[in-house]
Image 1 (cartoon, rainbow, N blue to C red):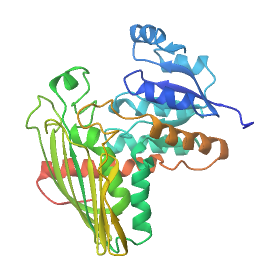
Image 2 (cartoon, helix red, strand yellow):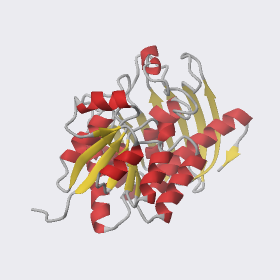
Image 3 (tube, rainbow, N blue to C red):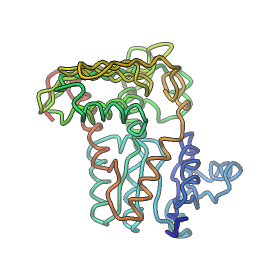
Length: 342
């Protein structure tokens, strides 16, 4: 049994994703939730009826009243910076839901604040911890695909009008930073970048074709990487009824296709090929809350360990910045109608 003290978490934000963080943290041996913070007194009172923790509605009061080692930010995307900076100033570690923020300026301010105050910053990208994605990475590292040539990321999801009308920030530029790419597509884009390497330039196009929102519900891009590889991205929330996200990787000696978090096709000249046709689980193709908490738990366990044992988390704030930078470049490329160098 561990003798390490428990890392005390406060969770900032009380929306739908909060329950995944609570469930994850409470199952981690060296961690515990001690408080929550909501956006209003009314929401805080309602939240206290659901969860057995005090719920504040002012972050300064929260920090003054509780002993906290780390916060988990679960507020809307454009509201991460302020709580991150306030926590960092008090020596409190920070892990936040994706995206890191809605602009590179705000994301960089988070990274700077945590670095200046010597606290850790992590960004949730739980899809990196799924077993079949780990298998995909291992196959590439073992050379089973040969030299990697090209990758595709497809996020052809669907969201109905109720989804965007249920929260005032969804699909807005200030609150969401955009829509289909920065919110729904960013997980698969992160996996694509993790596999393919550092992006050199981007040509993108985004449109709003179906929903009455500020952000895009259809986005496409061509990526060129510094190592010579290429890739395409397609992300949408207008593709009824919604299909599992798909990551394709092609090399000189083989290919792997990951769909809904599972390897559905694996071909290699160097070993026997496999195909998995089992039912898909854990994809948010049509239901944003159909995901499992287990991979959040794995990432949060690593973050707790990084605090206790003084090492960088597996997915740091700098790592979380990379897909945001590419998505912002896609938006800018579409606006300027030209190839954009990162």
